[in-house]
Image (cartoon, rainbow, N blue to C red; front, side, top):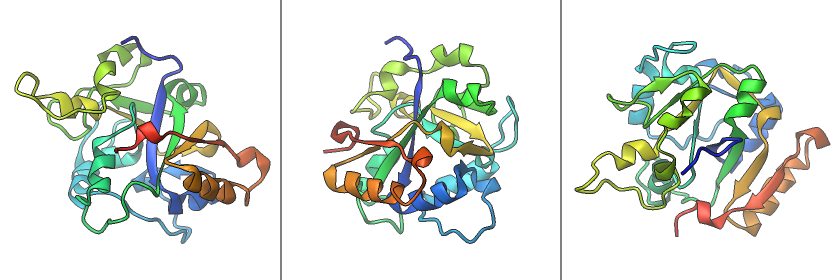
Amino acid sequence: MTIPVPTPIYRIIHVDNLKGILQRDGIFAPNFIPQDGIPYRTIHNEQVQEKRHVKQIYCGPGGVVHDYVGFYFGYLSVMMLNLKTGRVEGYNEGQEPLIYLISSCQAVAKGGGKFVFTDGHGIAAWTAYYDDLGHLDQVDWDMVYQRYWHDTDDDLDRQRRKQAEFLVHKSVPWSLVDSIAVIDKRMQGRVEAILAEFPEEKRRMVRIEQTWYYY
């Protein structure tokens, strides 16, 4: 598969967090969240988050993974399946409240954002990091869009490659979010109602993408 250009990137959030993101006018990395009292509905595996808090990055702006806002290169992530099937402690709402915020690598670069990206899951020991879009060919583009991504006897590295990430340093302005994807019409209406509370320039197209969710 050729590299799509513009190159989409996808961030999964709980719909309850959308209003706070709009109030802040951006998405913030865990280590740079403003102390403004806006609540956040966590959907993350705590053990994974602990590792991201200390995982060092040695290119681009450097630092640790939690200095960055994480996006996936593809949809149907391992994270989404774990949330759907109740494998994340403390979360039992399934995938319906999960929505995609969509941007692109090129939009981040044009907007002056500092970034790194990976060829697999960010905390895996053998994952490589890059800070130049000229190296996007190191991402396995066939794999990141696969619906079925479990490791096989012939390929024990599928799941890691599926989870390739694009990481934006410190924050992502809301202006760089191009659109929002949801599971069904009911969630589309809920998201559009939240957006309607804000000025027109902050509203985005909300589209239904059922194939981006697990059956």
